[in-house]
Length: 194
Image (cartoon, rainbow, N blue to C red; front, side, top):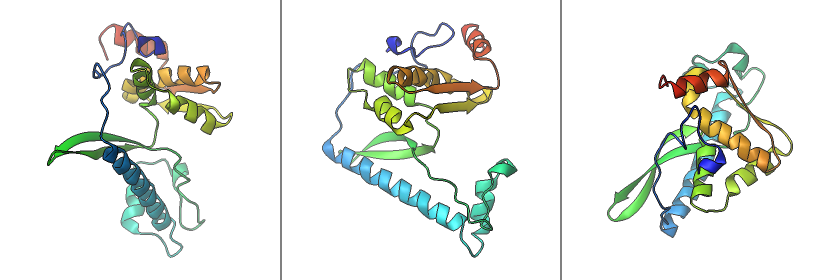
């Protein structure tokens, strides 16, 4: 896993612990994950349609989606603009055992691919196919992937840098841009300040 470059400021490896070995979930869990993915993207389509509803959208939904968003990111129903397509989604799942059955439960939905580097590093560590980075590189089709963040979100910088390195190895380009120099973040991690 360390060979993927996941680490910063003297940390050898990722922030999180992972199991020593991967486990194989039952086939029905994979089927459920596909169904959950389809439902989430359908949900996003419905939210988008309601947000840009020609009759004015739903006030509560519009207020929620525009909460603390910079004005230049607001999409109003006046111009019929969309929230733009969501190309990827990274849900956090917990696996619960209910009546002897593994049930995936989504606890968070992230549109930013913040933990893709960790997922890639796990694939490498477990000796699994690294299709995540390869498919992402293909999806980018020559466009760069930009991770833009503030130091408040710096706990993801290890994963983002590792994913950019993996993208480079796959012939694609990724950049990590923060409001604080990465060297300064690394020094704070090394000093135990982060």
